[in-house]
Image (cartoon, rainbow, N blue to C red; front, side, top):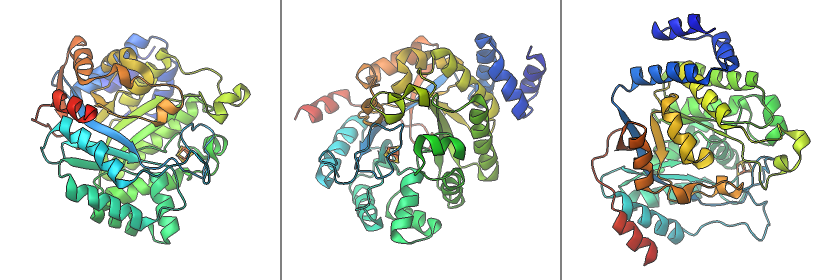
Length: 380
Ligand code: SF4
């Protein structure tokens, strides 16, 4: 029975960790969904589901960290390693703005890569400022906490100065990638060279103090327990209480194909998280993270159908149109071919909501997308 928890939710009271623990153990998924959707409607009363016009750009796949859950990286010296030339990055952005239009900061570039020992702060400053000067339409939502920590380390600069310099060069906001599970025992198993829990949190804390919005993520379904997931959500909620700089939370499950961790079933849970687990996780997150305004669907890993159903489990945003995605697809999962703008809007409408375009700051964008222009840009 979760009647007492439901009463807390309807009264607008904050849930305790033990409440979240009981919700996780509650097997009536529909009841969890009803509660989570109720909270979603308090935060976003309009029958609207938002989405963002965006593109992932993975500027380098060279990375010395070699996380066991990652299929994207190539170690330094690999013949398959790359750093994209600026012209190639610009060509990708040309395609995005041809599609997304000219409204300032209306299109999002999610630019992330590996920890490449050859790239110093000046590389990032030059790249970011070149994009900012050339594309006023683009919001630079770039560089995970892990990358920023490494850039600071290579440049022998304090974290706040590194983020300030990146911001001055054009960085608008920081994506939540690299959080995985915010527990060092888990991080030791899945990526022991990666930044520690406190380090990941500190990057976001410093960004928020500088007035820079960020997002928060969780990758579940590998070696962690439900307790680890709850601890993760609790750490995010505590940090959000400080300054409120997280705009959104996004969760997805581990994609095992082509990863070292996935290759050894004795080292992880052994099977991908189910749709039930995903919806339960999303609903509990919506109920527990009472101070994070938006929850994004994860259609890249869950596929369009579970993503659509999640709109009734606390999700209010469909995420990015993602014209390009390399990281999850390297691990064998890709739904990007199934998800044109028409398909995304249809899924949203069919679930009983009106689709509405937004920017990275969750402000409405009036300009329509230009699907014909995109086709011309891609085929020219
Ligand atoms: S997850 Fe990031 S840090 Fe880890 S190996 Fe992959 S690219 Fe490198």
